[in-house]
Image (cartoon, helix red, strand yellow):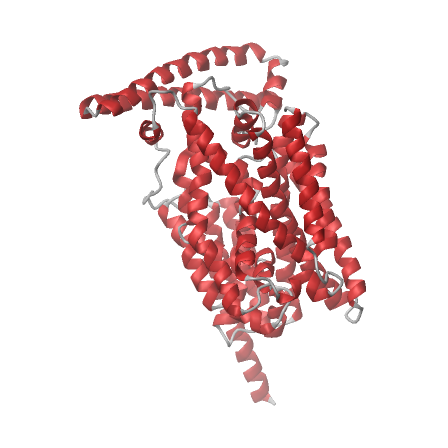
Length: 569
């Protein structure tokens, strides 16, 4: 990487940490540190919510997903606007009127301490694991750039972010998120512009989209009802609705964002901002990946994008087999390039018959390239004894480092840093808040001073930063990072949502019913994940439904038992 790019990255990192601490106010008070004294404007809260979602996982994992599969991942977000409207009229006013620090405080007021503690514990487990994935995404980039190993790069990203989160609190997190959001969007737009400009002279945007569409990469609706397929219209509108209601309505990393708003009305407006803009932003990210695919149709493309594992195979006993695959790949890629050029020419001519034949030929050649890549992936997995190996997370970093001009490389790397730091800081703040409020203040030291709680909060932030860093080292090779983070979340989210449905929607539900239902919900999801092929998005539905059904049954049984006991008296 050129020294100009290093300078851009270094200046950005120093500035964002300094600016975050500079804008911090009243972080010596508990409410100021955790909730910014409930004083932030709706637009800042809304941008912070979006920045927390638009993480480096999105910039790296989702662009790689767009390269490999196209736009079909967009179906995952179709339920988001509906979820935001539902939450705006249900949980948002509940939490604001209750004046809580965490969503789980409300559960103790409604049920009991054990339900609150168990639900908060599930949040801590799910969020800390997901945070590890969030950290691992930019670590992939730095590992490619610097060649210093994933562990070192993970610490290089996580520790500075933990530092300004420890001292600045949620107010520092929010205002840095606002700035980082603009940099992220600018970086994505810049990448799209470069990709379009890099197209061959005889291939315009319509022809590029035709090439992507011929391989199915522009498909945004799949109406097949297949519970094993995570990306269909039905999973994106039904199963994902449960995921989004849980994530935005019960996950402390999101609840804490809108609890900082000045009123219920402003908290609602901050959520509705995501309802309006999340799908277009996600489409932009996926479109970057799609255009990277088109770019590599006409430019030399590596057979596999993870060069670390590739070098290991080249030096091993299966090097000759891998070299033979590379020769086949080069020939297949050249044939696909010719077929792509023929399809672009046919599209420009407007001749329907010629266009259909060219599209079929191009699909055939693209299928051959995919087959060889699949064989190469299998070979690497066998040779390195790494069954989880996947190179989808390396696609966008490789493009950035090898194809972008000096200066823009630094800008894109800084944008990836921005995406990572905005999410890491927000999630560290929420983990610290839940740890202190739901456990330490509730059970260990209920009567201590704000100063004492703030000290413990900063220590908790440091602990969770180190824990998530350990998860990040493991998560970097788990496959598409955007899928990994949603798989982690879907294991917990449905059951947590079920408890809140009982709390808000069923006045006769009891604490024992909610607690037993939560255990049953987690057990049902664990069973579904282990013994069925049901896609992870549907785990949210399974968990929520089981919690509500078991919770209501146990609550009814408990009331009957109490009534019978009173009659015997």
